[in-house]
Image 1 (tube, rainbow, N blue to C red):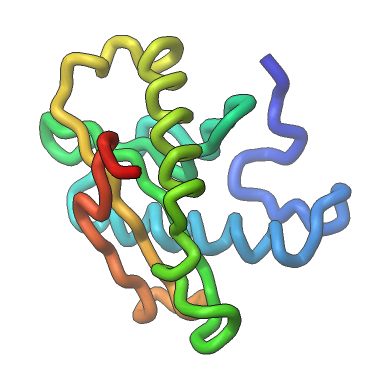
Image 2 (cartoon, one colour):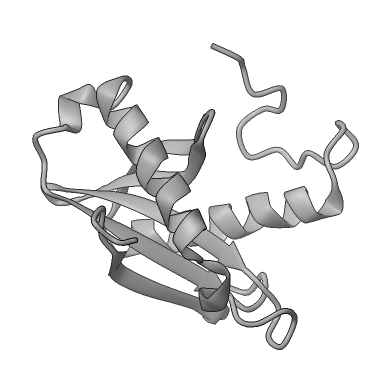
Length: 139
C-alpha cells in the first residue's frame, strides 16, 4: 500500500502538489468538520483505487456514508452539483465497493448512502450537504 507523502492535514503545495490540490484538501477538511459537527464520524479519507475515489467515508449512527466533496466557484463551468456526472458517480460507487471488499469489510453489513458536500468557496458558511444524493443503482 502506498503511503500518503504528506502528513495528515498538511497542504501539499511545495511537495509536488498544485494550488488546486491544496484547495481540494482544504475543502475536504471543511466538509469533514461540518459533518463531524452534525454527528458523523470519519472512518477513512481519500480512498483511492484504480477506477475511482471517495473523499470521505463516515458513519452516521449505524449508516455508512460515502461522501463526495465538490468545491466550485459559482458560475465557473457550472455549479458544484453540475460537476457530479454519471461517470463521476460510477467512480465513487466503484471505489465504495472496492473499500467494502477490503479495508471496510467490517462495515459491509451496514445500511449505506452516498452524500455530496458542495462548497462555493472555502468558507464554513458556504457548505451545502445533500444527504442520499445518489444511490449505488444510479446510472
